[in-house]
Length: 315
Image (cartoon, rainbow, N blue to C red; front, side):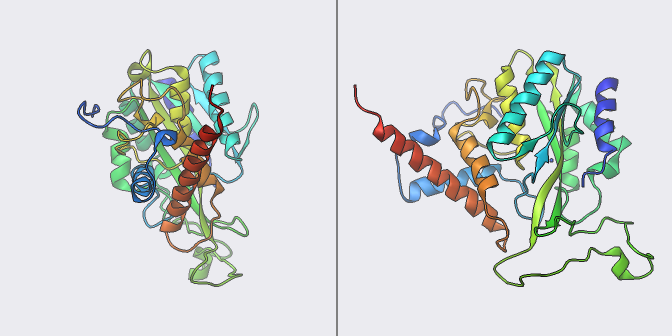
């Protein structure tokens, strides 16, 4: 675990400025297989988004803005490179740039034989890196305890930053940080220039700044394929996903550790969710706006999938 701890601590030293299925339950539904329309379809889509989306408290859904760099530690080189390439490909598919060899990781995947032990060691060594103290930058103390204590094959922790959409400047103060002479309250607060005051629009958006993913090799090796593991990591690295989400009603890669046959790779639900998150026009005031954009994206993906199926000529 020492090598894994060292690799993870190297990332945390950087400034970030990321039950078994019920056999009696219904079969998980594929997005392109949903034949119902109207309220039933809307309920399914809203249910999926409501389960998986996990924004920070009192904040909107965060996403990466610009470039991501994926790093993998403590795995043999061929598997590590595969994970880097696959997660980077998914990132590129949603419009992100990806860093080349030698880039400084802002998404770090660390393999270990003791996921809980590594998580606790990291938090003990660098507690401030997990909770920097800025409003809206993490999911809170209860979620951090869950990250350390709950037994999972894959666990993750993300940091996000509220920023000015026009300038990219951080819109939240970090405790102890100041500018100028550090003598007045103004020196301890971010300064934002309001360019378009409106009750319907907001200049402040939320950007992911760091994701650390811990993979327990004893719980994953031989149980899922490399593609399943890579796509699962991509999903939880590129979006704020609730680790306690109950997605058993849906065919999604997020079910793979409950049922390895659930999905071989990212499914229609997963791809539509990421597409909606990264296609959303941010800036709408209100925390529900981002979720609404994702809901609409999944609805459009369902329509496209069924339209394409209708166009296939009969043999």
